[in-house]
Length: 459
Image 1 (tube, helix red, strand yellow):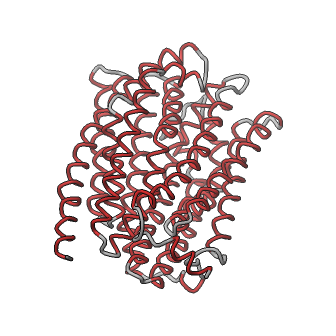
Image 2 (cartoon, rainbow, N blue to C red):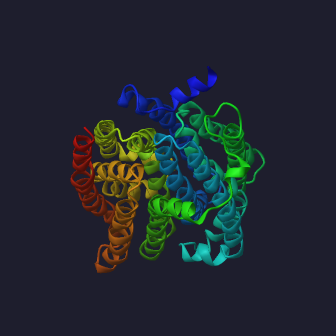
Image 3 (cartoon, rainbow, N blue to C red):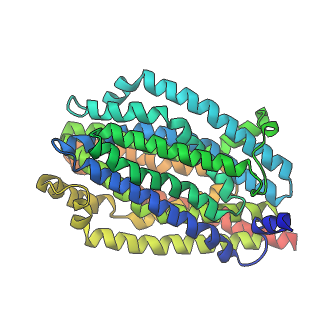
């Protein structure tokens, strides 16, 4: 009886499509809200350190590219393995699904150890390459050294939580994030202020929190409550399977890695044309972006297993319904979020720091950066569809298009032709407009319409 209940929970080919998506999306969105609020509060703490608060905020901002690289490798395994896992389940091939999950875990372990070693060895040149100055280096170095020691826990949490959600356990996946964020919220003010550890305290609390989340994930996936388990016998790598995971995962990897690339270039150009204050503004904008974009990622995590499972089960009309619901919800939310940012930029910037200079710079920068955010929602929705259907080439191309082919070159060019720091911020909305229209148009004509033909052929 218990096995039947668990199987029904993970069978997305029955019942309401929108209901199945919301059952996964709502808890994951709430979890991301908690996590992002923690991130926001962390930046607020750093922005209020006694002394050179803006230098601490800028120093941690300089580490973001390295953190994005760590996250991109997690995405390589998680976003590559998750859809393949769900498609295999939709086909009824549970053994292959377990092997995909086991291979993804092994890949995460190896890559986590390698990344930790590389960051520790090359920390100094990396940070200066990514925009650190003599004033911000010590803050950045202290934070990154501690964070890198716990990067394996970050990777397990991000990479393996996907497989909990893909089996229909949305609340359990939510708890993974909530546990980490809650531990962080409790420990961070103690470490930063009570123990006087500053940025080291912020990093240490993050590592401890991610360790707790990783243990939660592993306990569930190896326990009796899950449908498919993480087993040692399924962890042996098979070249063909690894290749499939890496090929599809390259899309998520590329998205995060190109975000890191654009952040590196932004930091360098802001340092050159503006200074540490502008890097602090960008760090605040990035934190706000995480908050704003969080519900979209929640919708993505809720819809992807449903799309993948039904595609594997050849329920193509249900796939089309899932796409329609996902796109409509994503874009509707983006309209509301854009309006809030445009109307209240000053209040949002003041959350981090009340320095008059930072606020004066931050208000116009925030409005420019989010100017065409609605178009970005079209790309994020389309990108998730490509991943859910295993269309690696489309997903990789559009991941590269916006950040690598548009943002990075414009960030280098615009400031040097007389736009200064404004050129760095305006590169983002240009990429949102072009990338959003291109990816959505491709998804509609190449994927969505063809699913109707597949449905007719099956009938």
